[in-house]
Image 1 (cartoon, helix red, strand yellow):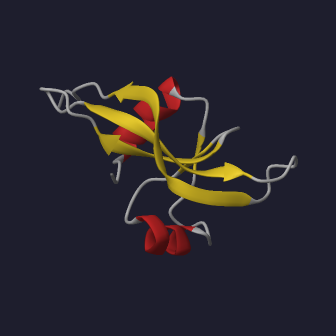
Image 2: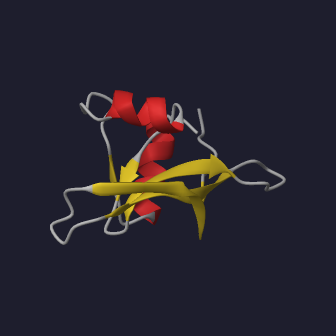
Length: 95
């Protein structure tokens, strides 16, 4: 799930994570491996959001893609996508 700027801000308020900027050198490789997503990094590793099956379609489920493989949090070890049980709620924006 590719997030717009408002969704990224809302996600950042709900998760203790940092967004990986689009111009980060790892993003093209991550897109090749996992598809076109907005990527987040936290103390657990690399995560994305996928749309949840909510009736209003205004939530995203946090999915873990890779875990840190070193104590310095500099190397990620990819694994099969795993739901984390965490959901982000997107507020409707007023225009």
